[in-house]
Amino acid sequence: MKKITDAGERELLLLGLLRRREMHGYQLSDFLETHLGMFFDLKKATAYNLLGKMEKVGWVTSREEKEGRRPVRRVFAISPEGESIFQDLLRRVLPRYEFPAFPANVPILFLDALSSGEKMDLLKERRGEVEKCLGALGLHLDHVPHPLLDHRRRILQAELDWLGVLIEGAEKK
Amino acid sequence: MKKITDAGERELLLLGLLRRREMHGYQLSDFLETHLGMFFDLKKATAYNLLGKMEKVGWVTSREEKEGRRPVRRVFAISPEGESIFQDLLRRVLPRYEFPAFPANVPILFLDALSSGEKMDLLKERRGEVEKCLGALGLHLDHVPHPLLDHRRRILQAELDWLGVLIEGAEKK
DNA sequence: GATAGACTAGTCAAGATCGACTAGAATGAT
DNA sequence: ATCATTCTAGTCGATCTTGACTAGTCTATC
Image (cartoon, rainbow over all chains, first blue to last red; front, side):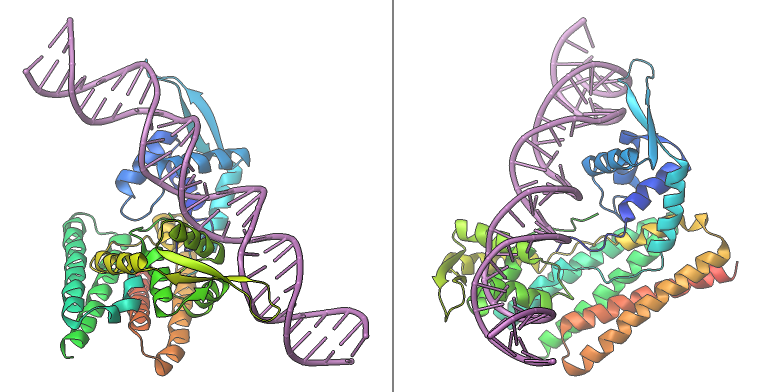
């Protein structure tokens, strides 16, 4: 229920970020969590792991850097080979689409274990959650229009419509 | 980029299946792969692992069974405690919603690394993939209408619309 | 009646993942 | 000045996941 696709999206992500400017690991993972965390799930420890592996195969290089009295840190940069991998991955991943898993839909399989009334209550509660997500999104959309935000809005709207139909169906029974 | 939610959906899935009838591990995982594989991703080895853990905590029981000259196999059944966990999980998972990760959208971050023309071509190729998914779905929908299939259709349609807008935007440039 | 291929029923080692932890530096509050 | 917090920068162990493998059975074909 975990693995959705792995055509190298994580590597693409890290390489793409390093392509903009070199960064040390903490900077990278902090950026991932604070700016991209709502879209992609790549934890700090995993990022470090990937950076290590990519360094081993020569896609990125690193150097130690000492600044002020802070502890030394390793600054990562993309290598020419990494750039070529990036270009390749980008063209390989972008045109593919595979339907992702929606583990949260497991309970839909077992709706008949619930009474009609309780089923409706729980579905409505879920609809409320989706609406909350959409609401939170509205704030972002005003400030920075972005394809990924638009994507999210459309997916959430689809969820909402679907739940509406489900609830209707449960109601008329 | 892997973990999307874990409120116990996998356990809920296995318990829910065992609730319908007892099954041995192979039967379960085979059913998962052939009938639910398009919706949920739970590999055989993972299912066995989970069954083992659920047995250890008493949510399921197992007995050995010998049939004909086949090798013995372990038949799993849900226990009363498992049933109560199932009921609890169902009510806990159903009302929640968390936006899933779409790792396939990573390349969207880096569209500006592509020329306008190539970008369009690749986006159109992806749109083709989504259309293929929708087409494949049509076949199923005729036979067995199911909320999960409807969900999938709506999500795919949202993807399609979104890609349409992206492509338009790239075109008019 | 021999060989090939698919089906049954699982196991296991290798690798991936992440929560929790460390430890020093800077900042803010009292 | 002192204490508590937060920030920086990363590491590590425990757990989770799965591709590949084993090993026996049945089925069909030539």
